[in-house]
Length: 132
Image (cartoon, rainbow, N blue to C red; front, side):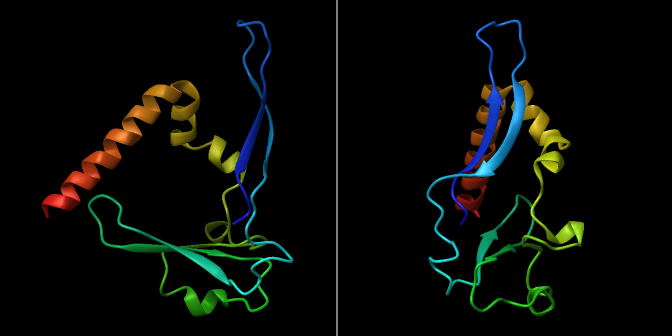
């Protein structure tokens, strides 16, 4: 929706120095902007987490000409994400939120291992779904 999410780190040429987080932003290839695709009110992502039923997460387009009222869609979706919402359960996670998560720390501590585990998890879910 807003382009590639980019995390910026400063990396020294000295291998003894730890990378330093500089911030984040949405980068190139945004498809929903003030001038493009304003007819799209939201994007819904349908998921089926392992061991549960189908869920819908709704990402509201802040540039939409016609918005979907949060109260109207609340009963239909698991979570809603929209810029500027005061309810912490109904907003996009900030970088600080992400940095405090266990999953974020796993990516920082062991990116290759975490990647391998995520691939294995996806394959396991795919195989389990194919056999049921």
